[in-house]
Structure formats: structure tokens, C-alpha cells
Length: 185
Image 1 (tube, rainbow, N blue to C red):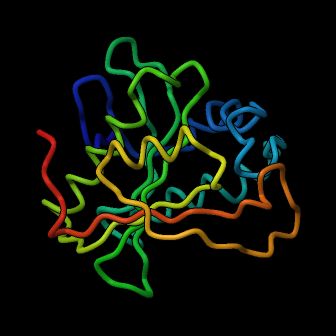
Image 2 (image 1 turned 180 degrees about the vertical axis):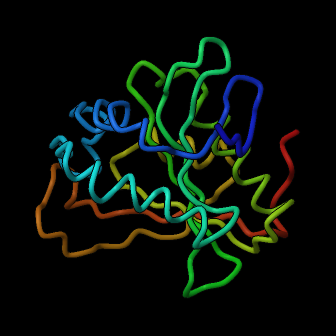
């Protein structure tokens, strides 16, 4: 199992085909996917045939970037994932993302993993800018972005095919530029 990054309490590692059940359980929780798709579970076949293969392919396509399985150091429990996704249209820019099981919420894992990814991106991958987006009403995710050092950039509105509760308030974009970054370690 290839470790990508370790923090005080987390191991971020590459996804493998063996993570299918854990990803399915994560995306089956309506609270976890509430601000993503209104709480609908992702079908197991979609995770197996589309999402998981795409996660795995990204490691070769964009070395150093991708979606990383997050496991607890103490005990090895799967907590969710963190992402640092390269933007091919804007070299030097990556999008930060995260999705954690509800049992991991409120314990500081999201901020810990996000900070570690941002630090790695700026210190080792040569990033110039990191962005993150969420629904305006997703205050928990917005707090993580702010604690990670990102600052509010703008509110924007997209024409989503399926409107979900809170969507009328739009989405927000946060960013952190390399010259504004302060390593957290």
C-alpha cells in the first residue's frame, strides 16, 4: 500500500480496487452527500466502473496529484478521502477537496488533511494557487477552507440539472496563493 502523506493522525494513500466497499458506504450516507447531490447515494456500479478507476488513473496522469484514501493511523479505519486535483487548463493550480464519514466530523481531521495537502502542494509540487469550492450554505466545509488558510474569493451561480436545497444561494470559491501561504508544521 503506497502512502502519499502522513500527518499526526492520518495516513493518505492511493486508492485500490479493494476500497470499493468503503467508498460505497461513504457515498451511501445522505448527510455526507447532502451538499453534493442532495443526499442521493452513489450506485455501487458507478463507483466500481467509473469513480474508482478514474481515481486510480489520476495517479499516473497527474503525478503527485489525485484523490487519496484517508485512514486513521490508530487502528487503520477508513475515514474518507482528500483530493488535490491538478487543473490542466491552469498549470500550477490545483483544487482541494475532501469527503469524510460522519463519524470523523468535528474531530479536526478535515483541517489536518487539507493543511497537509496544501503544504505538500506548495512545498513539493510547485503549486502557485490552490482553490476549493462548496455550496454557500455548507458552513462546515467553508470553515475547513478558512482554517486551512484559504480566503473567500467569490460567490457564483451554476445552472445545475438537479437543484438541491440551498442551491439558490449559489456556490463559493476560496483560494490560497503561494505568496500568502505559511507552512503549518
